[in-house]
Amino acid sequence: MTSPISRKKALGAELILLSVAFIWGTTFTIVKEALSDVQVFVFLGQRFLLAFVLFLPFMWLSRKNVSKQAIVQSLLLSLFLFGAYGFQTMGLKYTSASNAAFVT
View 1 (tube, rainbow, N blue to C red):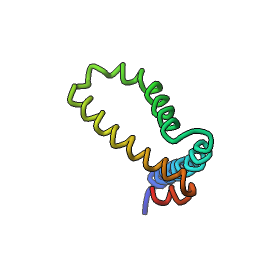
View 2 (cartoon, one colour):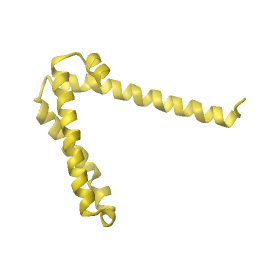
View 3 (cartoon, one colour):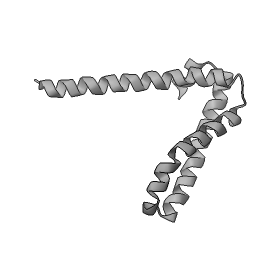
View 4 (tube, rainbow, N blue to C red):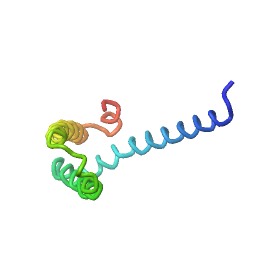
């Protein structure tokens, strides 16, 4: 038998997971709508630029802990991530939001 505290934590974790899945799922519909107004890579460029600007203060504060090797590796990984977002968003332009979410 689980303790009441453990069950309460598990319920909280399940609700958070459900919330994240809901938000993640709705973004496909939002992105699909946005693509009717703007091109894929313009949309992604704006999206990534906004994320960069929002995270810049945090990166600046922790810059003393970053090596050149970490920067090179981050740039390489970000290239793969941008490619994945590019393919996913391009596919979303040609299929339904539910199909894109399922494939993803």
